[in-house]
Length: 283
Ligand code: NDP
Image (cartoon, rainbow, N blue to C red; front, top):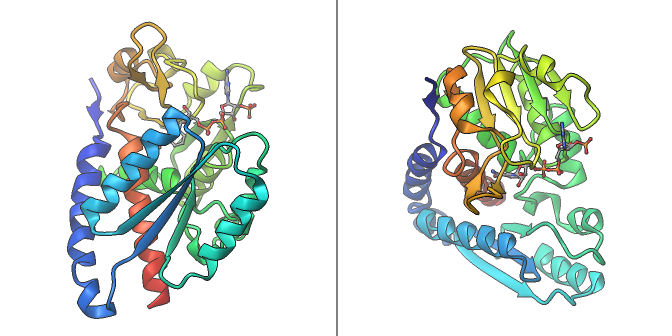
């Protein structure tokens, strides 16, 4: 039976340390960091993510303002708002909650955010810096995954890592970070034949597909580390569940992350860290 890596517990302790650090900022720098979150529309998932981010900001002592815009907002209006926030010295981090309504070009919006305020690490210059191993703001979910592995002293160097998913926000960047930790990385996607065969080779299996319980215990090597990034609604119970079938995977894994309470809280924790880093770079 594998040991559960609780992202919730790890995030709570990291946020506690950040709160202690932020508490010194007012006297050192005259103010605390400011994160502005832009939410376009009323997508329930996005509303809940934005609420979670605001709650974490409050815990850490970061000022948060959430700008709620109607789903009729035009791309031009959103770009104008971002331009204003870019030049506002009081704003350290800008986060545009994704996904955006279809009539708005997300790539264009992300590229419009000042790289130094890009707390999500999605700006093309931050992405380029990541792939060139230059200092940059790392995307929150991949950063959180590496922190979870390190928190349990899980060796990555020389290990076989398999990542399922090749999105810009999870699959690709986490693959690069694992590579930087000297793992041998295989990236799988919807066109990968023999997925089970590839997964069975993994010492570290990172699953970011977006399909409830797709990875089952028979796809996990005995003693592997399983990181479940997926956040889905279980079609039977309506409750949150991951991309892994937890009950069968935990039987094979040495370590496994739960959903909820695994990667999700670490993503938000890293957002707090990125906001503080952006603030400190200015001071
Ligand atoms: P995307 O939809 O952007 O990417 C999904 C990836 O899974 C794609 O690369 C796709 O392949 C691949 N895939 C789809 N079906 C299969 C299949 N049958 N076999 C193998 N690969 C497949 O999703 P994201 O990366 O944005 O998110 C993945 C999951 O992680 C979602 O559940 C999301 O909600 C969750 N998430 C959780 C976060 C957290 O903080 N916990 C943060 C971000 C995301 P292809 O490229 O070929 O289409």
